[in-house]
Length: 228
Length: 412
Image (cartoon, each protein chain N blue to C red):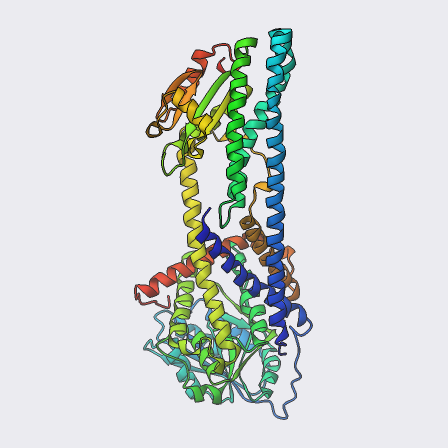
């Protein structure tokens, strides 16, 4: 009962085919991830409709503009939050051997859109008396900021519990975006102070606990459901 | 992104997948021959000697002798060799063999070790074929009529049989039972198809006496003499056949601690043997054997490295998460509530792992089906099989450390 030598070759070919199939599946998944990111990015890019809000507000008054846009806020907020998480998750899943410029580009775009949406939200909060806390989070890579990941986790936990009561915007200072840098300068945020969290215009640098931040959010926004 | 880890993972995956695919192909192409029955057509049935070395086996040896007594093969002698036992083995043997003239009892007071005892037995054996058997194992009555025809091929120096576990009861035993069914039965049959059997298991193996004498008997300095002798048989370019149709049942060490000691001896012995016969590795002179052994142990070594690497990364990950969750008073519930299954979040590496598990399980199910074992009866063991993989790596790590530290490994 001896075996033919060709079996070794066939096994090798099958293994190669399996490996290639895996690589193809992996590439398809990469494309799937990119497609998803592109689609979501388009949705949040349509936030440039924000201009419509401003014009509407000027032409028809705040009441009309608030009515038209309040319903959209929840979806935008969720889309932005989910995309922020998935961008990082998908980047990790994709980058096996080398960095993918797609994710770097989209991170930049995402940060810019976040900024745009945050400004819009601030304007709406003012014009429409929105009950919402707006939190900005400035961070860098963990090699340069060893507590940033911890702070990020704390903020994620707060977002999970507060849901739409709190909108959190995370700005990556590693990307060196001029708009984001301008915002950081406005709040006097220096790289060596990171992580820094801005809760409704109040700046807190250095890691802050969940309890501290929750207290601050509620202190500045006592009417939030999350605080009751 | 950890490039080094990913490259390493791909290499190990490729080697392991090739190995499993090859085994599956061989099994499928030879499935009708696995239990081949060879015709016993000797003009005069050859004389067979069975050597049973025993050291402190007072609780088990009576069962071994009882199984030997049931054998009806005519030209047969049994040599029970007491290797200086300090318990009641001698008394048990004397009582058990009473009235059966086929038995000879060599009651040595001094403990010399298993290999030396086997060599002594070979010197006393009258048979042209000598079977060696552990004193905690039991053979089926018709075993010799099944294995002897394999020696019709003059190049065959040894024949191994299916090694199965006797009455596995505990969960641990049920897991190890699967390892015996697949590893020490089916795999040996597969390896025999390309002359790469690298062990003649201690529970039962039968040798052509002249071949063993030619290679100088068992190595008394080796703690896994059944492994070492297989290398020397292969070195002489003799064949080791496997008869899956013949079965030996062995009793597993009762406690997990004893299983660890046993495995430590096996794996340390494997390294010792490999070092001794390193000249055989990748040497065309020894056919596929040298290449197969090199491949096998490379895979084991890389597997252990990958296991350690994964363990390190796993622990780092757990530690990081614990450190994160401590900021939220370990508020796992909120995070669980928000958990969302997202297939796109899985990278290629996850698919590599999933495919490896699938192929291993496929091999396991195929093995159980082809060896006529009912999967339903082995549910518990199948569920625990991933645990065996974990234990397997641990046993290897313990053994490698023991060898590096130059620790003397004992039999018990």
